[in-house]
Image (cartoon, rainbow, N blue to C red; front, top):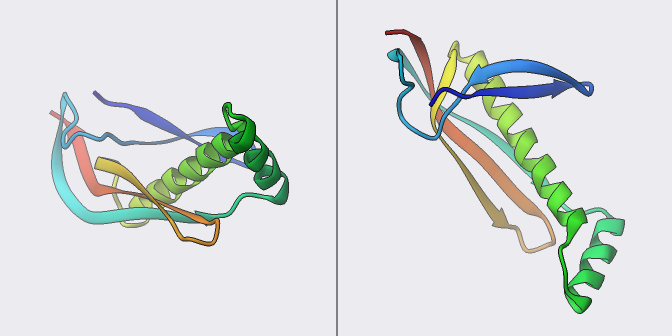
Length: 122
């Protein structure tokens, strides 16, 4: 399935290149592989997010502040991935994945990676 992702520049939604977790785009053929591309973000919660998260972990419930931070970090990593893909001359990304890890000091690393390709209609 061909999906079009959006990037945000200064709060304004802009069109970006298509990417997918699969290794092909229906109705398109890959004519060139540009290689591995990635976006990497390391972020720690703010003091307020840490306090609210700590309170929620004691009393239970959803930790909205952490969720917002995670969504923001994932979007930033995706935007960086798409920028990297454009920089190497790609017009799409296939095999996209997210990975995350705890760095131990309350920081989280999120990497978004995939294969940059040039595709054209089949």
